[in-house]
Length: 144
Ligand code: HEM
Image (cartoon, rainbow, N blue to C red; front, side):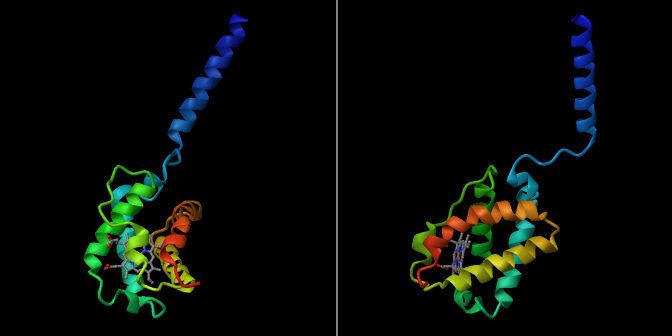
């Protein structure tokens, strides 16, 4: 019995050692996105894309894009489990008078995916962020 436990312990130690050498997968979405620095790059890329996107760019013609970038970075950090605070307004209040259509929401989501592709974010990680954003659709889209 003693021998069996010893063999078990050794194999456990070996397994632990091996997994410590291989790169462990980041255990939170925040880490998988590259923490604050990665999120910052994603949002900057997204802002660039949406300002050129014919489907949605007119919605932002009076928006302070620097402020929007700061707030999106905070928001993505919070929803991915990062140690941040979102200082912006409620999604429903912000978007309710903008007359946003489902197609425009989808356009922004598509731009976000393009931004993440560009930054080589894995599709599993992309899907996790999209899943966090999807429930916001009901607060943002008012025109079906
Ligand atoms: C998942 C999708 C979206 C998220 C997470 C999101 C998030 C945000 C955030 C965090 C803000 C800043 C809030 C604040 O000013 O306090 C904001 C503002 C804004 N969003 Fe969105 N948004 C989304 C979709 C959209 C779409 C589809 C449009 C239009 C096509 C849009 C248009 C705007 C505009 C124009 C503002 C600025 C409003 C102002 O300056 O008062 N958003 N959004």
